[in-house]
Image 1 (cartoon, helix red, strand yellow):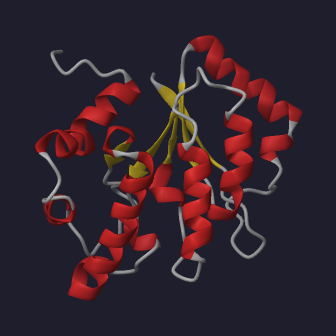
Image 2 (tube, rainbow, N blue to C red):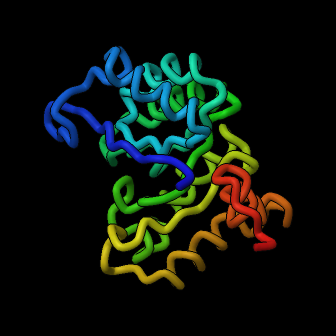
Length: 188
């Protein structure tokens, strides 16, 4: 066991949870303290408008590694500048990382057209620019990934998005960051 994931997406028109006050809830804080006690990591799924509150909360737990899932779940209708500001608030914390995953949530069917691929790449590269490749990792999100894209096509598109980056950055994005974040020893 390396950590836990808790889906905290809350928005009145799309509630994944029944409440939006986890970052100020004393019960949630008490539970989160157990992650620190047991040396566990936290996979965070939330909406962009929750990122600044999350950053304030995680600032108090610098010994709990956190990874933001799905680049923060921006909707196609979300303000990209507000999303970037939320990413920057989280990226200011050196123990927060980001998964480059579930891009179809942000750019539906992105792999089907050059325009879609370009839009998805914009989100990926913006996230890498904010966090750095040493704190970003590509992730597939299968089986929840849309049925229209297979694993090989997904990874090929990811590779195309970062083909111009140095090899050490690509290595970090495809395996190095994940190994470091989750404490995986690649020799075993």
